[in-house]
Length: 264
Image 1 (tube, helix red, strand yellow):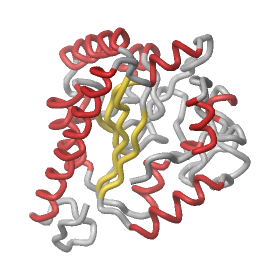
Image 2: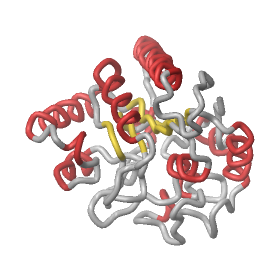
Image 3: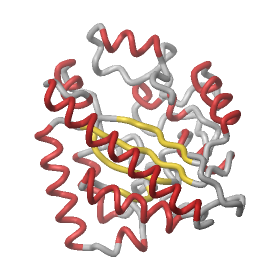
């Protein structure tokens, strides 16, 4: 478990710079991986600067070395600022991940019902705006990790209520989307314009114009009881995910090596 991927920036956030989302050198570390990396920020250079080259930053170099050495069966990257559960691809709106796609989608479907009631599925990209250089896509593609997910686990209650309502409306209107398409489909455009995420990007202003207080509220529970509910819900989600993956591996389902394994 990597608890803190950018300790210097984390210390700045903890002292009040609540809108900060880049490394000390101004790089978005989740755009700095060598997976369809692009040299220019998709829109806001202050928020999504990919760095001068792939793996230019010591933080992503260290993370690459660690995850490559570990060779996980399951990779899970955790974020906040909205709610959603994603699988590859993040860079591509045309294609779903081919390896283990049905298995990963079914796991997300089950977890969503019990823990999120939020957007889930292949992240993709919204029309005209890619999401390149993510750890999610790199680990899945380069390491051939059988199960790769990204969870966005928190947004403030007002936005969460609106997100949940919009999501339920979308799914009721066009439920085919989760079995035959992806979250980059134009059907979801207005939802992600209102609730942008690290993995389904639009040309929107995620933190611009927000006060430091607004950013704190968007990314963090502000009350002890709310914090505890978030911790308990997502801890249970992680354990449920592990059990579902182990059950698949014991049956030889979704194991890229073809060998039955129980490691997660």
